[in-house]
Structures are given as C-alpha cells and as structure tokens.
Image 1 (cartoon, each protein chain N blue to C red):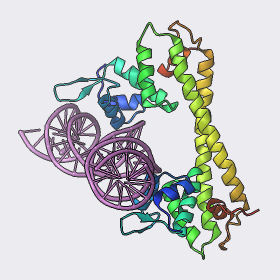
Image 2: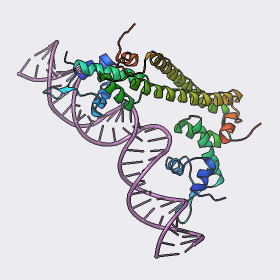
Image 3: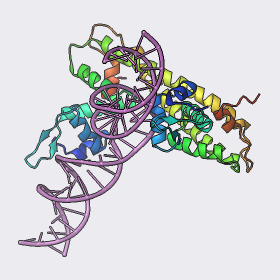
Image 4: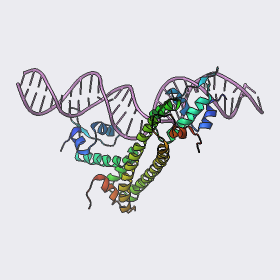
Length: 133
Length: 133
DNA sequence: CCTTGACCCTCCCCTTACTGGAACCCCCAT
DNA sequence: ATGGGGGTTCCAGTAAGGGGAGGGTCAAGG
C-alpha cells in the first residue's frame, strides 16, 4: 500500500501538481523514499480524498484545513463542523444572489439589443450610464 | 473640467488604486500635470464610469477592454457587443448552476448534522466519502 | 548492457484584479 | 514650521494552483 504521487492522483482525481501544493502548505505530509519520491500511506489518501471533495464543494483551503483538523479529532463537536458549513452556505447564497442580479440586468439589456450590423446598442448605453427611458 | 485622481474616484466609485491600475494596463490614458499628477478629461471619466459598471456586471477586464473598444468605435456592429454579452451570460448561468449544486449537497448534509457537542457528523462523513445509507 | 519512455523531483515564473504599504513629493492653512 | 491631506512610484502579496525548464529514476525491450 505504498503509493506514488501518480497513483494518488488517479485515485483522488487531484492533479499531481495540486497534491504537491497541498504538501507545500502543510495539508498532507507524505513520507519520502530514498530516491526522494513521495510515499503516500492510506491516511494520506484519505486526507486527499477529503480535500478533493471539500474543494469540489467550494470550501476554501483555509476551511479545508479546519475541516481536516476536525475530521482527525475524535473529540470534536459536530457544532464546529456545522458552523463552518453554515458560513460557507451563506457565502454561496450571497454569490448566487449577486450572479442572479447581474444576470437579470444583462439579459434584459441583451434582449433589447438587435445584434446586427448597426452600431446602436442598448447594452453599451446601459454600461455608459445613459438614462434611455 | 480637469480632475485629479481623487475627484475621479469619487465620481466613478472606483478606488484611486484601481484607477492607477487601469492606467497601468492601458485602459485609460490620463494626461499629466507638471507636478506629475494625473489629469483626467471628460472622456477618461466616461471610460472609467463604463469600466466601473461593466466590472460590476461581472465582465472580465479582458471583456471590458473589448467592450470599451466597441463603445468608442462609431462603426461597430451591435452583434459584436451582444456576442460578448451572451458568452458572459452563459458563464454566469454555469456558475449559478455550480453554486446551486454545491448548495443542495451542503444544505442536505448540514440538515442531518446535529450540531451539538458530540463528534458524530454527517458532513464529515459526506466529505470523507463514506456511503452511509 | 543499453536505451527508451514514463515517472518523479525541485525551482521559478505566471495567472486575476486588484490591495496594502513604504518612502517620497506637493500644496494650503494654521 | 508644521500638520494634514492630497499626490507619486515601486515592491510585495493575495487564492489556488498551472506551465515549463532541467534533471534524476525505474522497468521493459532489443
């Protein structure tokens, strides 16, 4: 069960570069073989899998670091995990709201734009701040 | 009508640092006074206002550069503007979808988590990849 | 036994769109 | 002269890696 970085990459879906980066910033600490190759144990694999999923769910690296610590702490309180998650959920909601507002404005402008060879363009007018009503 | 960077900042809502950056990357070209202060003309103000709005709607700097060129080109085709906008709209939609998927997964896990002093946590189980069904 | 191709290593710069800070100049009022 | 509030440049840093150079290692085939 001694895996090289390539094996771990395949199993976790993380790129080798990303795994090296995670070691750089201290998220995993694989052993080293005599030839300097990284040697990943099962625990490293678990951690990297965890990281891969947490990142895919939009958690920041910093959140991941904290979640990983909780993951490894048998005496954790689930409240701590839930708090990180709730904060993240709120940020996701805020982003969705922002994006929806942008989308509404832009799709409105876009609908009014002829999109032909002529220069007249409500989108540009909207951006330039003209009050074309 | 000769404005300093601070005046322009107030009128556009952009920070002075941002305006200097926009000059750095060639989006605006204010004149210079004898004391090296930037001197903004009305056209600079228009451009910066345009940039401010375009950025607020989520366009990248690169998009902004192209939009600005179209804005200044009296012989533009509105189709070109609309195409940039449509591409951007699609990206916004993709992001919204991603975020909504994350939100669904996370809020589901979060709901199942007691959030108390005990260590058991469906969120961590979900992240670690346990198939707790 | 040697070579070839697939791995692996470190190191450094690049990305986006700025932000912060240091160190310095300019102008006006007190 | 001094204080405060402008302005200037340049350097460094952010998040989360990506790209590529330059070089070592390993296993298999000729």
